[in-house]
Image 1 (tube, rainbow, N blue to C red):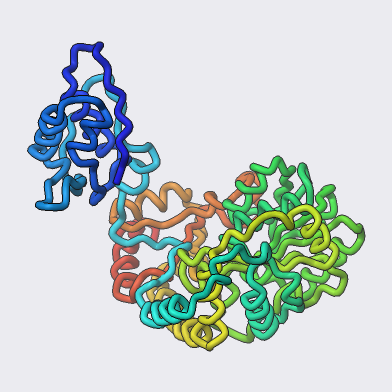
Image 2 (spheres, rainbow, N blue to C red; image 1 turned 30 degrees about the horizontal axis):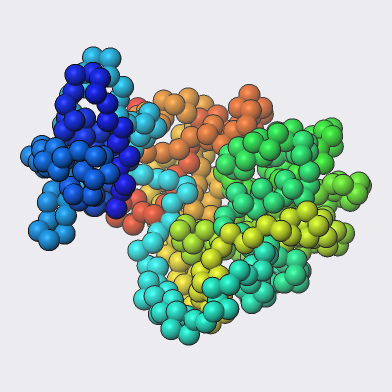
Length: 475
């Protein structure tokens, strides 16, 4: 129940009930009072505001008459769904909705090829519910006590075994730090590596990581990419101490870094004691051709790779459990400088995830989703055959998106706008660029991303059909 902090005044010529009415109405319009929220009773609100109960009755009555709230017998007053309410904005009045909402959410496309979306239709809800129920039934006081700052040892042990078997990562459970998403882990890295660290990043790159590093006042060095990933020669010309890379499936280009380039980066890191590589292995589970690609950390013999991963794509975005593997030297720094930080993941959630992985449910679910995504991936490639004359298809055989690059270098904005007019939302490569001007030599002008993780084959087919219509003048 919302407490409704209302400031009443005897100036301005507005009676008390009107002030109460307008305050609640505006809070609902601004989204600060959400649909289904219960309002204070007329008696309690009148006592809090020190006004007559009839004054609050008048205000609630007007709100109910206009459809902002509803009275439920024997339960009280609740905020109504207001999506369809019409509001005439007066001259000089500020709009109620955020600019981001107006430009994004309101512009809902019929077919959204988001490269970040995953399918949740086949998530094993019943299994997750069963594990949760069993854990809560057997819960004891220990489970509700403050746990290890690095995460429960049982979960770290399970993650350690999983990483070794699936990615070739060599680590002990003691080296793993569990956190609520990669943002928190990046924050810990800032405490471990220090402030104002010069860091090299692939260009284009994962823009969220770039934004987080920038907020740390890190000196960011964008490094261009070739067909093998981050350009090692260009990296050597910088004074970067750390390089952030995605060698198994680079986002957004999909480049898989070969062993030769990996060795070059490891050699660069080994040349100085304070150099490190951050390996972001965000979606390595989804590879559809050939053998699995081992992690960069698996080739590290000098403790130079900080390995990071997450379960957000492989299980569900709401899981919000990430992890990093620290080399022994940095682990000691973490324990000295960050050991007092409490774990940001609930111990109950850690226990659920541990049993989900340990008892084989994760492996079965992952195999199922890998097969599903491979089918969607192959279906999308088949649908794009008509585009091959004018577009280069790249980034295939892994991940949850592919790239289309115009051979005639048609401007990205032109491609996106044409698609949007037909109800298809695509995503431009420039959104992932740190310095777009440095992409000139990569032949990626006019490149868009098509994600397929959250779309059924029927939706993919209809979306591509509309895309053909939108780009008919180019094909």
